[in-house]
Amino acid sequence: MVLLGPPGAGKGTQAVMLAERLNYLHLSTGDILRENVKQGTEIGKKAKSYMDKGELVPDDIVIEMMLDEIKTDAKDRDFILDGFPRTIYQAGKIDAALEKLKLDIDLVIYFKTSLKIVLFRLTGRRLCRECGENYHIVNMPPKKEGVCDKCKSELYRRKDDVEETIKKRLEVFEGQTKELIDYYKGKGVLKEISGDLDAEEVYEKLSVII
Ligand code: AP5
Image (cartoon, rainbow, N blue to C red; front, side, top):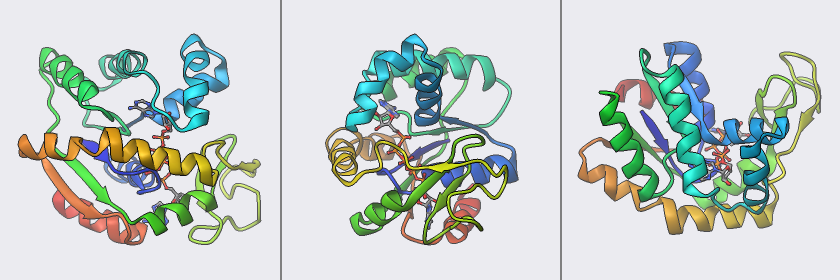
């Protein structure tokens, strides 16, 4: 399954819920890239400047990285691609690679989400430094400000969650990723859900589709 939508649409939130409740394998390009940046790997060094500016990391880096993940972990499990593919080029490459592995993308969910909601969500998002748990200062606040409910570690704000970079990420979505909606419509696998609803409502709609 592929989750498609603008930044802040709730792709990551729904992917985590699906992984916890229905045992999907969750592969998030953004999370894997951020982990590479944190570990200071070659991929991380190459990706960092693009991510900080809200631009797409070059296709070849991302494609190779995701194909490695799929080949290693996804052969025998239903999996969710969160934030990948993001260009028609990436989509073509992943289709060809999956065909060789006798795998298929059989569902693509497009989270249609309004601009106002996206800006509100991303400027208020906080994440746990240790376990990665996701919060929102208004919608899903931690019990104690700045502290993770689960592991008690510090919460932080993503570097690309500042207004100027969010705007750039939205431009990139409009200019380079949105055309994937027609690409997957053409393949007959696209379903649309409103990303504006609250997380449990989105999950309910998603469950019905699945
Ligand atoms: P990535 O990490 O994928 O960021 P993104 O697509 O911008 O998506 P986000 O993680 O910001 O949003 P989301 O839709 O997952 O929302 P979330 O659930 O977190 O990518 C980061 C960067 O990596 C890119 O800019 C690029 O540089 C690079 N990159 C990644 N993939 C790439 C690729 N394929 N090719 C090239 N480069 C790539 O929710 C957001 C907030 O809202 C949270 O606080 C959450 O708690 C809250 N929330 C979520 N759902 C709801 C809801 N229904 N109601 C209320 N609040 C909600």
